[in-house]
Image 1 (cartoon, one colour):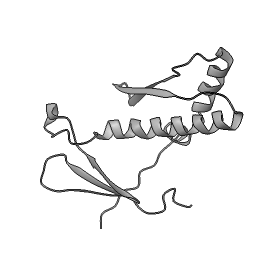
Image 2 (cartoon, one colour; image 1 turned 90 degrees about the vertical axis):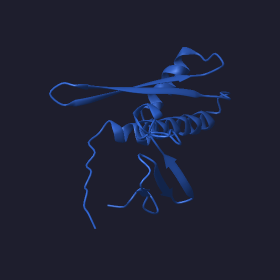
Image 3 (cartoon, helix red, strand yellow; image 1 turned 60 degrees about the vertical axis):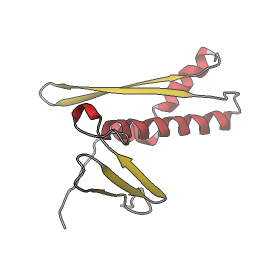
Image 4 (cartoon, helix red, strand yellow; image 1 turned 45 degrees about the vertical axis):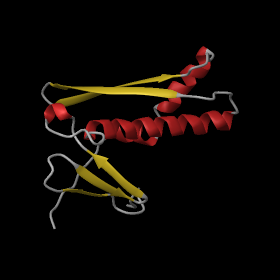
Length: 136
């Protein structure tokens, strides 16, 4: 099975509480936690980063589809948040609201909502994910 990334993403943390450095193929991403829980808020927290992945994938997928259709949709916005509930198992609910600053026909909005569900990160999050951890 082939990896989705060309190179591994490498994360590290030193002694500063919660401040993580994530090295990706073309740069560095700093992640942190909010001051309210002991971080310095120097970067997005892990939940924000997860939602940012879904936002980026949703927007890119919609832009590709809109461009292929030749529709005049100059801007798309997506707003995301999530909540969790502990029933017999942990359930995470993500709310994704897609908006367009200009009016669109209802059938186009419905189609774009359908296409948003097809973005790769959305499909990944809706299916089974295995995390295989080991130490070196």
